[in-house]
Image (cartoon, rainbow, N blue to C red; front, side, top):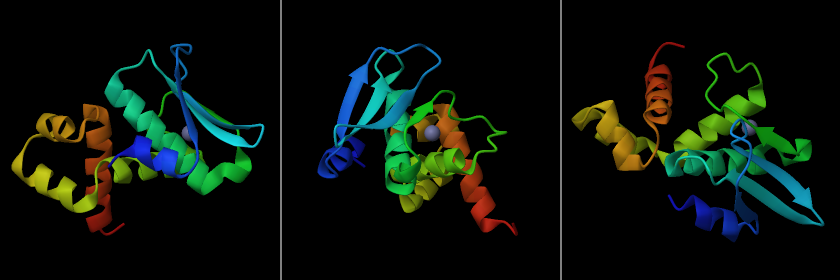
Length: 136
Ligand SMILES: [Zn+2]
């Protein structure tokens, strides 16, 4: 999925800029233009996830903007909006059918490489696949 192209098609401006290490990205509106900021100092895979996460905030939660995001994978994330944005990002970057196919034929490292995401993101996505077929 071309997340960059999707953001552009929705009229968002994507800014890649050096931010503090603890900040992954943000979503804000400035003079009527929606902007997604991505920390250009982070690994490209992390930047992809951040962009997709912020796009999730835009599509699902923009009435509650601005957002500033740090660590995106806190397993204790109590905030429903953060969980939803993470789930959105994982689904956009690792679509269901392709992900299941990759998962059935490779280990988690090769799955992560296939989708250009971190191992952590692939594990997060795998765990939601497992949850979705469980008895929840
Ligand atoms: Zn967030």
